[in-house]
Length: 525
Image (cartoon, rainbow, N blue to C red; front, side, top):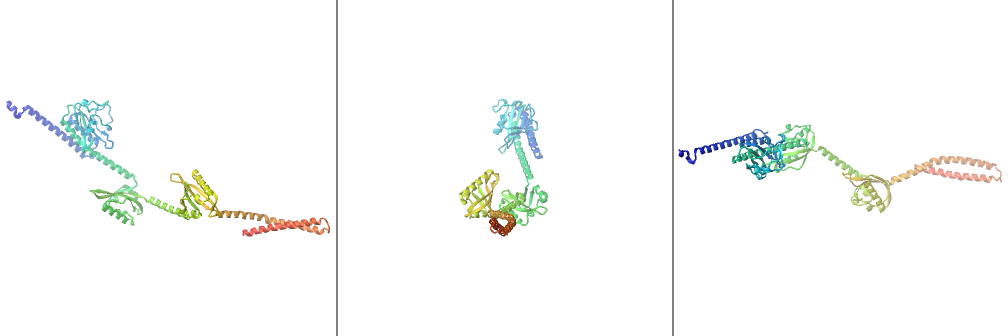
């Protein structure tokens, strides 16, 4: 009997116990596999399976397998390096944060911190006395037993899976299960986080594209559009209506060769020109000026698609042409003006002058450049000019003066206007001046003054002379009559003779006045 009971060195009781243990282990392994299958199935079944749902499902499987009362599943935020815990068992904290708000841990401490820092699993059934423990914060439940594994995949730490306070001691099988679930968690977590980052990146780029006024596009190697942004609607097209059409269809006939050559070189060399300028047709048949920047998308080292941005630069080009035209007009005015135009710096050096200005000094504009007033004027004149420049720059106000100067040995009169020259920030950088030679004008003014004086004399002198002559004639007539009635030897006769001589002298003066007035009239004519 005893011999039969001890077959193969085991008693039937021990054999039964071993068989039962093996059956229990097999059952737990199957339970673990079902849990893993459930997690993977949920991930594969729905694209909307979130990180939070994943974390809850993994934590539930871990708690069920180990019989743990508490636990958490958390991931590492790649941007900040912080641990984000979207799951937390109820009862862990006396005062909890809202259920929809994940806990954020910026520092890794205690048992779970040791797991993350060392990327190693940890099993302890004496958590309170474990040297790696940092205790529990106020309001947190006491931890007696702790089991955790880092969620690592391809040596990248993705997160952690931890359980605590099982109704029994944790054993190696629990550790193996937690490690297995943590690895599944890491694999799916990295994929989900990568998907979320990709989705966020796509949304960000989509928002940038939609907010931009530029047209974004992609074309294949044949030159046909595979994508175009909605900004094309501003030119009368719909994105759906032009996908698949060749880009050359929209180019101006005179620009198609340029565009075709650029496309051909890009296919052969795998590189695109930095900027390409050409004209594109709107749906109404008109054209706009386009500036294109593009790049090459490669696969296995070979180009398979081109992407680019098209900017409407019609207004910019029109403005640029207008600036060129205005600049050319100003240059022509500057060069052909008969007035002297000059620009000086703060030190009084001539930076730019027109031909008329340089000609005043018998120089060319190139020869005058860099010189100061002290190089071309007498010292006193130069000092006056320099003082005027300083006053114009310091006050910021324009100055207008008439001045007499000596040029080429001649006295000349100049009318000069000076104004401060400023840069884009409003800082004074020098003086802009215009000078006009008004010497001849001053002569004409003096002549005009003399002519007006003569006219005034003429207006007064001629009538006055006529009236004076009439008076003199009357005096002379009476004097003659008196002289004829007086007898010889009469003492009054000499007095009458003096009167008649005075009349003659007065008549001579009147005649000269009439002659002057007549001469002035002839000069005027």
